Image 1 (cartoon, rainbow, N blue to C red):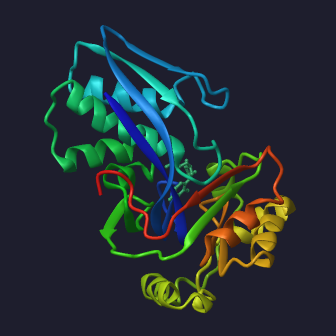
Image 2 (image 1 turned 135 degrees about the vertical axis):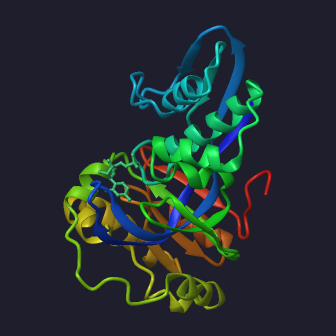
Image 3 (image 1 turned 90 degrees about the horizontal axis):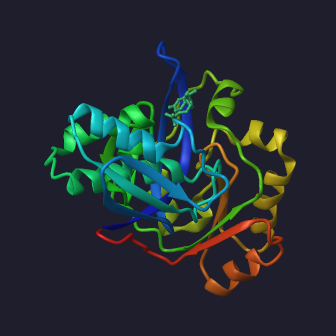
Length: 282
Ligand code: C5P
């Protein structure tokens, strides 16, 4: 069985408050882009994982293995599986690659082992693996609250070319949250309404923010420089994705977006998504 695990960007991200369980409540819009990992699941008597990527951990922090082991144990599955990962989404980049892989493995193994699990059981398993894993079960575009696991359908057309540039910098999500200075202001704007306005008129993105930008930019000025470069090259809007290190820019013209990707050296990962993109199966 072959599966595609698509990456996401965050169209705005507001961190509200630290919770007693150590996580943070947030508001964001997850939006999948045309960049994906490939996962293959083959019959096998034990669980086995392989990848050629040097960035993917081989220990218990590997999210594909965590997903497979959790499913196997909870549902007392006696067989295993061979999981192969072709990693194309950069790691530690704010694009949800590991979470998307985990969701694909959960869905794939549920079918492979004929478990017939309900969406709500899968959602609960996904949330145990990571805050944004539940989003990738359905994918597409979603307005998320809670720690990122409470999902609300949000139909949004993004009529722009989306350029994503990832420098060779890994930003740890845990580090980013623990260094974040929370503003006491709360959310004083409606994220969904301002996104809808921005999709109609690209000059109206001024309210769309990512609360991680100030501290991530001050720790890594080269990430701020990517945003500035994109804006200089004609992006209508540019923003950090998740806790970084990726920056995305929205462009009205394909050739402008391609030109904006040119200044970055080969150690940067570049991806370009066409307007109104929907991943396969949507
Ligand atoms: O859920 P996930 O494993 O992706 O989160 C990684 C780390 O990021 C958590 O251990 C936590 O420190 C932080 N985090 C948070 N609030 C969230 C999501 C993540 O504090 N909503």
